Length: 246
Length: 204
Image 1 (cartoon, chains in turn purple, green):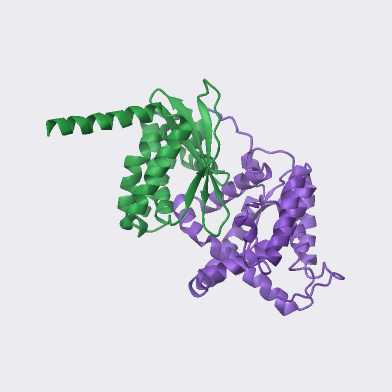
Image 2: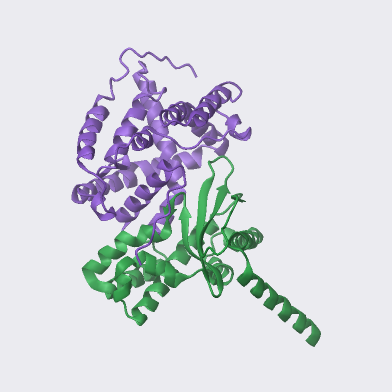
């Protein structure tokens, strides 16, 4: 995998994301701690975007993901997944360090080193088999640890559910994701992005049926699950136990 | 024959008594391993036979769940306005919905194993969290935690938290929304309609 990485205009192509992110951050700063029901002040807009997303998903994303699942054999799919995840370990490691978790940060870099070499460009996740497990970290969580509150909930087509803060975090992570660092070979970069999207969607396929069956209101169900999941991730899987109100 | 019957009956009783006295972490482990063993042996369940899966859950899992409590938490503060009949209807419909969803997850079970996280409990505690992880080949472990409360019939699960997402909390907003729109009876009707359409085999 010979990827030409040039940094000179690293932000090109992600300018749109950044502009959006900056906007979201401004909106996010306006909000302080809110009751759960107040976390979605733009619900009307979000529900409309959700419908758009569902349409795109039904017409394009889901069929592509299903095709990928059916055509590509499991070992190859795991290779693809490991390849992207291996590069993400750089982001995970860096974010762990930003959050003051030194040991976890070093684990991330150690994993990247081992999997890029022994794991043949990250195709095999050798590090996990050696017991080097890495917690899920991203820049949205880093911002949360630094004291930035959630901000309003935002649902965007294809990008999916986010809080304003996590949308900013997502944008920043994408900008610093080594695979997208201004690949001057635009077709290659776009192919890599498209494959990532399909691969990502394919791994969500098993959850589809559960959500369809479990939810009375799919939009609200996903919103609640997303917000809970992020809350848990920010606390590294051990959020303080809340007191029930009855 | 009589003796055999007596033996089986005693054995049955003793497991029952045992289950009542089990510590919460032991209870979670026993029930989990029991269910997984049953699924591993049953081709029908693995092939997605919903009826059989639901039957398995009803016999092996439900006795250790407190659905009244689960439902009261999902409904939130409106629970207090509900009449006893409404409470019972709500709990019954919510249970049906969750059992169906859970049965689906169970039939997609393949080669996963469950790892039980270390558990500590202070003497006299009546509300605990038992933490487990589902390990899947080629994927990250999924956190699966159970909230249990001590009752006079032993420990009972009142919430399941998957990857940080509480099943109970996840319904709170929708339930509140339904109650605002159509009262408690409105929520009961929505749940009934949902369960009916699921039973008819289409995911609404």
